[in-house]
Image (cartoon, rainbow, N blue to C red; front, side, top):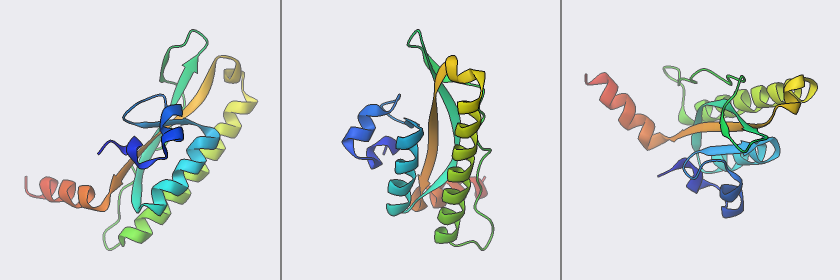
Amino acid sequence: MDSIKLLPEDMQRRSLSDREIVLKYEDALKALDVIVKNRWAFLGWEGWGKYADGKTGHCDYQGTTGIEKEPGQSWGEYMKYGYEFVKKTIKNDYSDWKKSERVNKYELYFCITIINEEEYSNLRHQTSSK
């Protein structure tokens, strides 16, 4: 399933991508709650920009590195940690962007990467069997 399908239709339409979750700040924060409510976890996020000429793509906000599940950590603990970390870093980078000259160069969007427990288990099983 494309991760965007997890979100309400109105939020899906506001995403810069029809497959990935790429939303402005307010929608991104709301999406975090929807994602956790549906028991998906966060792998990270990266910044996207929407420029005056209509082009979109990666910008100079790196976001997070991959958020890995620690050995012995429950799925619920992993979800909670990822949620808090992603929310904090999105808020911090948005605040930084609002105070910077970049606010005049592009609109900041957040591409949020998520995974459900079954996909995560399958991925870990494939990785460990190689």
